[in-house]
Structure formats: C-alpha cells, structure tokens
Image (tube, rainbow over all chains, first blue to last red; front, side, top):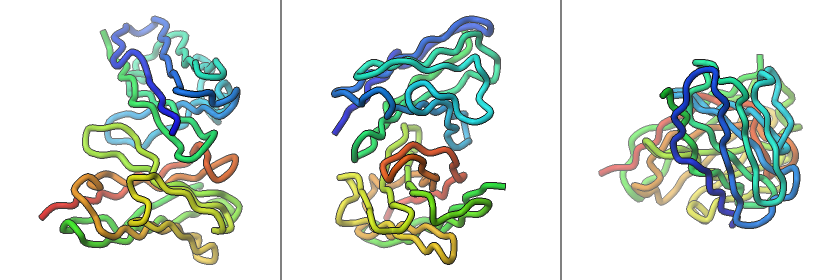
Length: 108
Length: 120
C-alpha cells in the first residue's frame, strides 16, 4: 500500500498570502497519478487537481499542483477567504487508492 | 446536471448488514468507473471500493474485503454497496463518487453522502 503523508498538519495564514502544502508518497506514484481535493465543513470533497498538475473544471488559476515521483505540492498563490478548508492528496496509481491524512488551512 | 445521490444509510447493530445505493443522473453512467469513499466522524477520507464501468472489475480496501460487495446496475444508473458483518469502525459518512481515468481513479463528482452508524 502506498502511504501518503501530508505536511504540515495545520497551516495558519492570512488572506492574500501564499500557501504551500506538501504530499509525500512512500513509493513513487509516477508523474500523473496524484490528485488534490478541498473539503469544507459539512460538504463533500471537491476535486482541485488531477494528474499532479492539471486543474479540474472551474478551479481558479490561483491553485496549482506540481511534483512527481514521491514529492508533490499544492500551491495557492493568493489566499481568498473561501480557500480556508482541509486539503487531501490521493494517489490512484494502484489499489488500494489512498488518501493523505489532510492539511487544515486555517485563518491566522 | 450531473448528480449523485446516496441513500440507505442508518443505524445498525454490530454484525448486521446494510445496503447503500447511489443514484446517478446527468451523464452516461455505464462509461464511468465508480467509487465508494468513507469518512469517519472527525477523520480523513478513506477509499473503500471501486468498480469499472462494465462492472467487470472490482477493488476493495483491505479493511472491508470479504465483508463489502460493490455492484452496479447500468440500466438503472445505480451503484450499490452491500455491507455485511458491520463493525463499529465502519461508522462513517459514505460517499459515492464518479471515477475518471481507469478503475482505480480520482473522482470529479461526489454525492453528499449517507451516514452509517454501527452501534449496539
């Protein structure tokens, strides 16, 4: 099983700042089998990024994904108030598909 | 509008069974793999099971293998999860999600979930 470790667990930032979230895999997931999701309280997850760097439909361009192999990053260039949420990475290279434990992005 | 609506959750005793359903609309259901993902109270996301568009290929998390069965009815645009021998640790919000790119996939459309509580 591929284990995904996200860091930090909690990130405290202010609107307008840049957020950098990390996802590290226990073994390579290649260059394109990594997705990122955003989840707000009481809501279902929302797909942000797939293929490590491709934005999903209607996702603002302030969200970007990068990385390959075992190290991946989700960057939010300028935080908007609605961006404060929990973010999960997911690998889909192989079964079982696995999620990271999440990073909570909170308002400082 | 593309939509997924789960149903069938509820309170069940340990060892009991439950069948979850997911009604799909707004897209050609048979051409997509489908996933079940769960979230225990206050916890993160956990992949449970996936099924191919034709229903031929199915995958399960080790934690549910042998107890849960995923299936689909493409004529009815419906996805199912039969859950047997339920345990307290199966308590969670269960999401149905549309898969993209293969059977083991990421999910672009999610339902709002149905709550399963396993307790005596």
